[in-house]
Amino acid sequence: MTNHSFALNELALPDSFHFPIDINGLDKQHLLDSLRSMVLIRAVERKLAAAKREGLIGGPVHLGVGQEAIAVGISRNLRATDRIFGAHRSHSHLLALGSDIRKLFAEILGKYTGHSKGMGGSMHLWDQSVGFLGSVPIVAGTVPLAVGAAMSARLSKSNDVAVAYLGDGACEEGIVQESFNLAAIQKDPVIFVVENNLFASHMHISLRQPRDSTARFAAANSIPFHVVDGNDVAAVYSASSRLIEAARQGHGPGFIEAITYRWYGHVDWREDIDVGVNRSQSDVEQWRSKDPVRRLKDALILSKCLTEEVYSGILHSANSLIEDAWLKALADPAPPSDSTLKHVYSS
Ligand SMILES: Cc1ncc(C[n+]2csc(CCOP(=O)(O)OP(=O)(O)O)c2C)c(N)n1
Ligand SMILES: [Mg+2]
Image 1 (cartoon, rainbow, N blue to C red):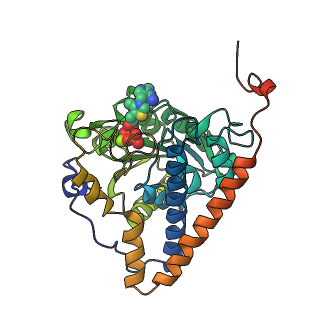
Image 2 (image 1 turned 180 degrees about the horizontal axis):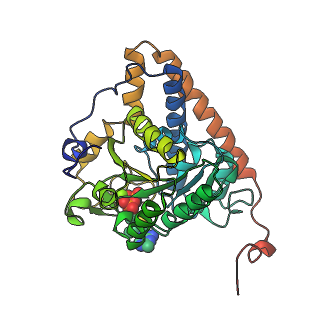
């Protein structure tokens, strides 16, 4: 396991890890697929930022632009019968599994064709066909649900795993520690993926935690862990593949801490405000140049597996897919007024 000091050191510095990622000996087709997926997720979130700015979206959207390598690296080890859970910033978690973009847009636009029939918005996503069992805005709320889903997989001997995506801020919720403990003692096949973007809302981790790495919580519960550069899709993929395989074999939970940064403020489209007192414009600029998409693209170009022309084609097809999905979602129907109480529980 890496990083026993539980200090992130250069992984958390804005001016390190700018270079193309190391793809030596890796399957190039696999990496090209990862690139396509990251480009698509980026383009979806850029579209959402623009639409929010134009006032076309009613509810809040929490964007993960800059963090795409994590969900893509993890998801390439998953299958549709696995059980994936997210939280308030989960567009990438859902889309990296191959979920339908139009359905995501429809939910965010409040259309009846959306995941939660247009009544949940960006933070209530769900698509069982790809294994995504849900996201909710209650920070850490889905972490114990992932442990429950893993327990069910273990009891039914299915070899499936659960994945709980959570933030560095979510680790400050007590239920997360209880979930780690329970998963460890029961040897449940669950992978906890901490997207450590150094911020919880507007507060930097140095103002909230005595150490900037959250992996010590895994160590405290004897859960095997890896701390990785979250802007390196190959690093995320290989670290998670070992833990996921071990979980499938019955060795219990695993923990990945992926260090990254979100380019936008905590919520919605603004980059210039809502970013916290310690997040200077120069930090944001430097983190933007640690772009996970650019670092993979450059590595593929250097190794002659990609040309600028082919890359332009990838961008172009992502954008046309998205425009098409957006127009269809815009034309989708709103929920009928008599449906508002149909899909809620009451006692
Ligand atoms: C139980 C709970 N407490 C507080 C909030 C308000 N809140 C929403 S997101 C957030 C910060 C979460 O930070 P982190 O887990 O690091 O995720 P990130 O936003 O960085 O992706 C907070 C405090 C909430 N939604 N739920
Ligand atoms: Mg965070």
